Length: 252
Image (cartoon, rainbow, N blue to C red; front, side, top):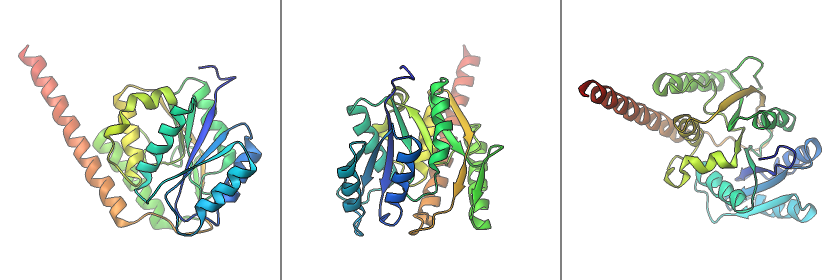
């Protein structure tokens, strides 16, 4: 992969983001006009898909993938990554459409990829990272959730739930995405966990996360519960696997 000629695709899932989508795409086009953008719309009932089509009509750097129904964040990203791989992109970036991920933080993620990382996570919880306009309980929930992930999986990441990240496409090929069932923000933990088990180079860079100004957050109790039980299950299975290896080595 040649950093000078890498083709980069921003994969941006949408569902009812009509008030923020054009602003987010516009900020990306202003900061890094060379990147391509794929809007993955889950048949938004508010006309987001039509806005996406209009943006694509105005620029050959914007593309749209229409899906029939809202099947979760994980499924949207898997579809977007598949599209990107099929179209020959070297780097793929996860980014929200609601304005919470700032375009001006993207160069730091791409610099990490250029320096040799397989996965670069835009982190709110490493030194230099920050959050603007979040209520205290949301910040506490994020910190507690990430602490739980570190403890249960031993993953060593400060922000495994973060949704602003860049991957080498070759690294995505190693993560066996066809077996992923995680939806919601658990998908982010799942991908980071798979990357860690695959021995990939994972790095975190600080970003400023900004609470959305338009629309409603997709976070709900079902998303939190899914993340808790899947993370716990992965941790139990991993420790059982390690124990079997240890006992087997002692037997030998």
